[in-house]
Amino acid sequence: MAAEAAENGKARRPVGRPRRIEAGAIVDVARRILQEEGVGALSMRRVAREVGATPMALYHHVRDKDELLMLTLSGTAAAMERPELPEDPRDRLLAVSLHMHAVLRSMPWVVEVLSLGDLTDKGALWMVEEIVGAGIDCGLDPVEAVRAYRTIWHCVYGDLVFRRAMERRAEEPDRKRYFPDLLTEADAAELPHLAQLADQWLELTEDYDVSQQLGAVIDGLLAAAGR
Image (cartoon, rainbow, N blue to C red; front, side, top):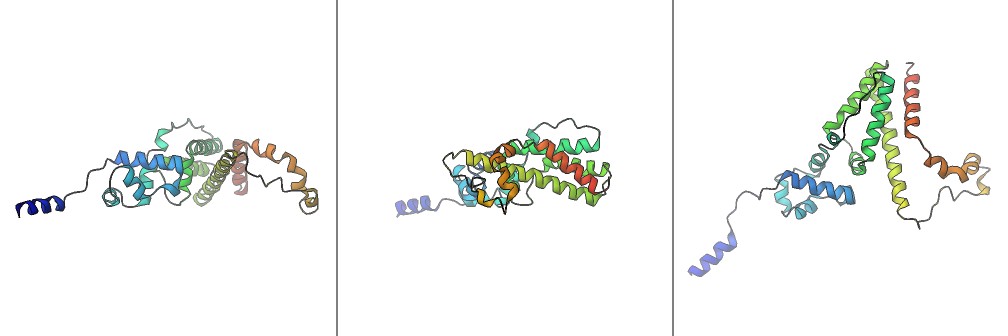
């Protein structure tokens, strides 16, 4: 009888607080998964397993996947030194936009996380502040400045997504390339410009200068607003 009671005591184990998990360990594991495998591979269950805890224990520290992503984003911008910005508001607008592009290009996993919507690193918001402020200093009203920021962000984000896609394709040299190879002389009547440029297309796109093109976008935004 005593032996049975002792055995039951072992089986029941007292219920207490879940095992303490270091926040740094959670973030380190999540960031490694994002860097190596992307957002699709990240889950609360996967992180819990890799830090040696149960999913339920992890939920005592992190509310959900969005909060996990926010924790992982936190501090990424602070790791990059802020550049010296020019006084001229148009030049400042371009300088901050290029800095944002450079920061995100060095951390492609961050671009993937940002694609989910309203997640961000609060420490990176100084760039948004500078872009909106520089737009206002250029003569845009606040609404125009916010819209200008969104246009700039779309250009930066779109370029980074395209570059990443091209890098992935380059890792598979045997993969069939469809564009511009699918264009033939028969397409010249319907697609005259593309057919004419097909042989130069790769060279022209590889020679893309994001600094020059962002400058042109900024000048266009200011000109359209009559500034």
